[in-house]
Image (cartoon, rainbow, N blue to C red):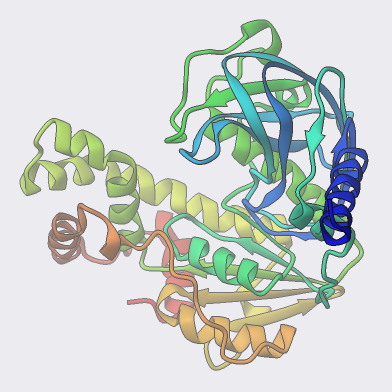
Length: 396
């Protein structure tokens, strides 16, 4: 063996020893300065694939999603959401197929700051990739804006686009549609449930643990609402944004969003869908009128106190700033808000959940136009909150 070969062999040996000593571990500590809504937190590969996983997680967050990958290459995984009031999670699971990677994710429609995780394995070793190892240690420091953004708005008003755009620019943000809890005190118990790869509800619930938890999506919504209350208690300045649109269009959009699969299965024609809408519209108006009234009550707002801007109305109260705008002005409003409050010029909108991109768009568009032509704007006193707000925002 010549001198060059000896040097190469020695280097390879040292590399393997270093790799074993520093890249296999039973303990992982991880910190992240900023976590966006629905963002990956951490991915960890196992030294060798295992059917049984037993590990403990300590964190400063009380809910997260874990994906257990049987094949990273094929993107095969099982997905669970865990909640713990104590923020301590004991995970002990058996799988039919061996797991090769674990991924932690944020399941909520809100951002988080200064996240930390401590993971201790009881029966396997984690494999740290050089990339993830460097990311953990030298995660780049963001210059965060101190103002927290709260999107409190009815459904089908462009809030997903707003949320995604704020996420792109690392603005600390949370989005909720209302503050009503489905499970109330039930959510305070430790629980987890399985979601399949299409995020549809499964029936594999442990009833003793879940204690009447029947809907995974509602659990996620409740978790976000609980975090919203904590968000409000923070001393940082807050920006509240509410978006409203013609309630008739919002109604038709929500009808299609929630029922389009049923329309397809039962082969509803346009007349059937219009009848379906007509039967439900009066009750929607009552609930929407109540929603607006409660919105004023929750935040102690009065339209008379708002000042008109180019694309919105603003009201400042102590440490909070409230903006209301119309769906039609959303793009211009986001540009206005981001530059004024966050010094971000010409933000690029992240358009999500648009009706035009959905399979039922043509039918939705036809029904919407027909519905608007048949349903004149309300004049009854029982809907005065709708009339007043939409007139204020010049929604026609």
